[in-house]
Figure (cartoon, rainbow, N blue to C red):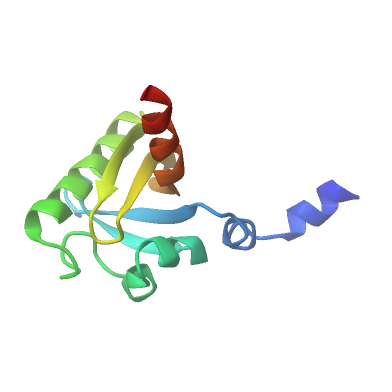
Length: 135
């Protein structure tokens, strides 16, 4: 039965099959007041590696704030976005143009357990189609 087969699959197996980039961020909390002070990248699926030019493969298990792959402004912005999702439980959605890979990306951050699940989709074709239809 399909339900039995699905329960035997791990989330990683399911996420690995998706075309969108999936990253799970686990919060790191300080000992005293349990405030979120950082995030660790716990998982990144193969699609994330393609979108990020293989950078996430080397980042799994590392700190968001101190991974030395991005400048300080970028890492603090990502940290602030992730922390807001954990603290409020509210999802965060936005689109931006990534100049490194020359693609438009749609990003969703959603609370998952104590951490944050990031879903990134390449939307360049949709953006270009919308621009063409406006002309």
